[in-house]
Length: 64
Image 1: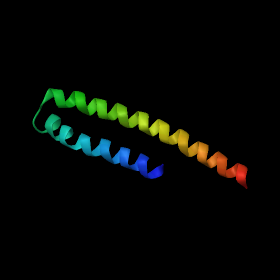
Image 2: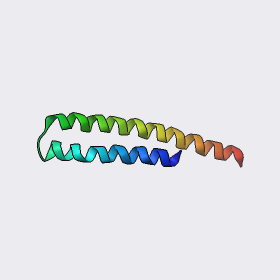
Image 3: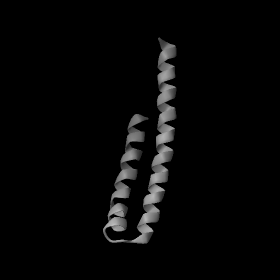
């Protein structure tokens, strides 16, 4: 599961790279919309990951 989350993070960040360049360097407005979408996807993934980490931590405490 952790590897899957890491792969998702990596995929989002890699997808953002080209759009960042297009928006800031080439001034393509549509790329800004895509950057914002990537940021939203990343925020959602962060929230899910935080919840997963908390659940795993709590499960580990119960085992001890």
